[in-house]
Image (tube, rainbow, N blue to C red; front, side, top):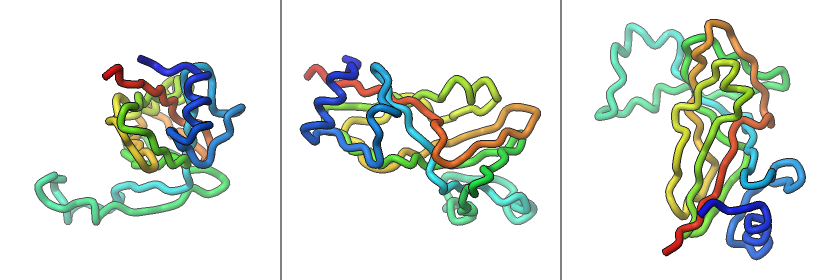
Length: 158
């Protein structure tokens, strides 16, 4: 069952759901919550080749990711590049609630593809990790604190 605005407000009020920082008036809209970009992001270095010919999940490769920060002027997502972002909000939900993550339509229209949209398991806690790919032929600028995804909360009937 998808939670409605009144149910979400009640669960936040009693402490079952925690979202920090959170502005109810700005972020909660009907049955969804807007989440924003933090200033942290990761990317694979442009000069990765020729050291690494292939990324292999059987071998540790996350240590080659570059960590960087989004300035007040934003970050330009280059065409064809892959980025890993974190949401500004830290979320904690109980074991009977799951999250559905959906990209903002205005960013999708610019060619920003959220690769890991979909369901996030029950009882999640932490900042959400967003795997982003610019599929547009043009660079796209994004900014810290901008809304990037919607989340919907679903309560288990069990």
